[in-house]
Length: 172
Length: 100
Image (cartoon, rainbow over all chains, first blue to last red; front, side, top):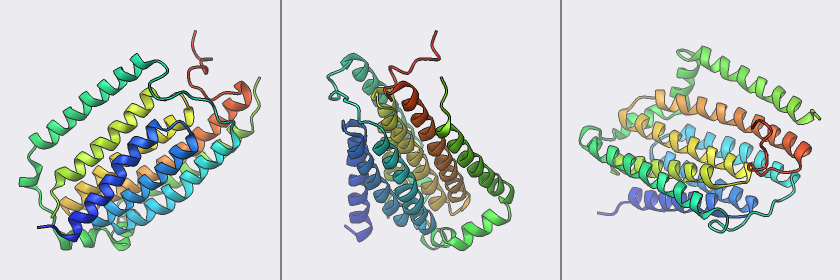
């Protein structure tokens, strides 16, 4: 039986797979960045299918919004380099990299199927809706995980100051 | 209901395409984007297990991973800009000042 959930998952997973391939194979970095935005949007859809509403919204705002705008600005500031087609330059190294990737991928697939997770774990619809809300995540962040949350704030402050200092410096 | 393996395989595939991107590309910005792809694959695994096990710790962890990713991309892109100013290239094969 084909339900709406399966159709949505197939569509989003297809977009995520195709765009993740295109991100690493396109020559032009701007096109790569735009496909990465599409990939993040598809992932947000998959998070919604997993009932993680807060993470889906944050994915769109933080990743597809803030981080990718930063990437696009930096690409705009730098002169585009002439990079060759995927297999034109150094094809042996690229085949080696693909082989390494394929080996690790089949290892992961073997592990995922060997663990027989789907017989042990079933999605509990109502519970997963409850834990994905802003209330649940906010309660976790401000009670049990308060110190990591504050540390993340300091990390962002340090990163902002560090980025300013690094981008300003002109060393010889 | 979609079994958990489907989500995990999608996550594994995205992670591997990120790995291949880091190993093959010469443009430092695209290497950075591949790293973001790998971080997102890890996030997808976290959210999957969080949702299937009925425990919100995985989603809290995704929040922290996103914070670290934002900090990392800000500092990393600042380093790329500083490098471009000094060496006029972002090709990672030509940036070898730490090699001897």
